Image 1 (tube, rainbow, N blue to C red):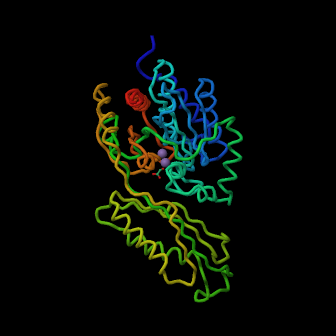
Image 2 (spheres, helix red, strand yellow):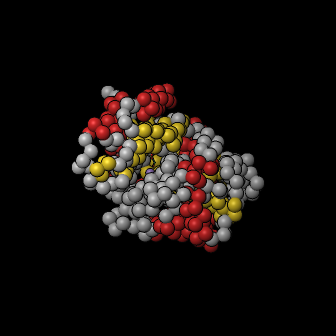
Image 3 (cartoon, helix red, strand yellow):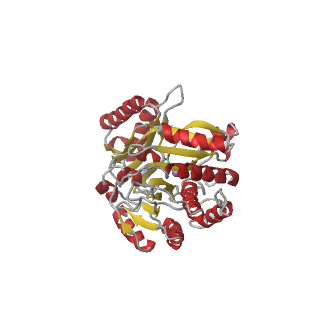
Length: 412
Ligand code: GLV
Ligand code: MN
Ligand code: MN
């Protein structure tokens, strides 16, 4: 008789397989969006999906959809998933856990010959991390119409490679996929993910029922100066792009200091050109990642930072471009209630929790009833090769997802 739970051994095996793609040998992976390694990981999942008879499709921004049919196959699918790209380097849980949990649900439904009313689809979003191509959560933003396809395809990585070209190149390695349009209707969306913070672990609680996600704004700031000889050019005659960038960063950091320590302000990348020890820098490009749970507060910080960049007095030219503007969202009460109900029925301790990290679920929340299930990660560490989650928690989250999906996919 088919077991009523997920197949834990299979989940463990798939997790070990995924860890081989981009393995750094130090416990993490380097698997940025549209890299050869991420493509291998995507291909491995697609190969298993095809063997199991699931239909595989792709949309114009490279999001992958793996479908198990329902009785009413033309009804909007219930979607579950996450992403396979990583930070550079990243851990073995962020994103990949949610994809594997979702895929395990699909396989369990098939093993148990569940006749769902609606199709159930695993989504593997393209470029959630934004580590290689800006912005973060690109695939879901384009799917939801919050970012134009043309802007996303035009995004360039640090080596000036265009996303559109890289996407075309990698799609060739994924085998045959049905093309579907952007923004196809979803009945609901649920994403499992590690918490990426310390709250569940501190509360000794294996499941977080996520209430929503704080707002995020990302900028690319470019400072253009002029190359000059480091030995001969007096300071008064320089257009030093790095000196200007540092002064500007200092000003912006000061305006984002808050006593409550709620504003999350990060400059995660800064590049200096031409990058020679004896040449005054002519160009600096840096990113800003700004987050806050309150929409108004985030909006006013957005304006103040933009004005700071625009009005900053310096011999250099400064341009700030907003690459992502995503307000805070609250998840659907019925999805949260379904997660809580099934956790209670399985005797699993759970708590409500807000997400500090952003996720593709954020854009899905604007399209359909959406929710997330968090599991703890050790010391709350993420975006780090030391990221680690207990297998017991991974299995518990996947099993809970399966129970919630089994309920929701029966809705007419
Ligand atoms: C997701 O990776 C985020 O930046 O929160
Ligand atoms: Mn993630
Ligand atoms: Mn991440």
